[in-house]
Image (cartoon, rainbow, N blue to C red; front, top):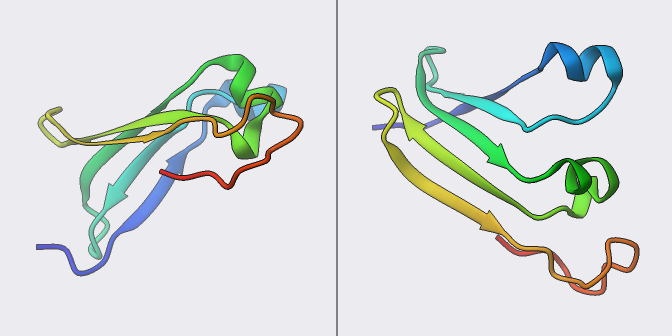
Length: 90
């Protein structure tokens, strides 16, 4: 049972050096700092670098055995990244 979680984004070396966005990876830990889940964001390079804050994505969350337990999907809500006419929803 979890009463609190800590989400820590893993920074890729390539992302830190070049300043470009790579697929995000997260460790989800309990209040003791023990990893209980691992999350990976799936999207393409175009979305990450040009539509960053409003990009579409799928995040797959897996437990420590690698079994997927949650999938979060956020589609792009507008036809153009330049004119976000609808609020994003997950």
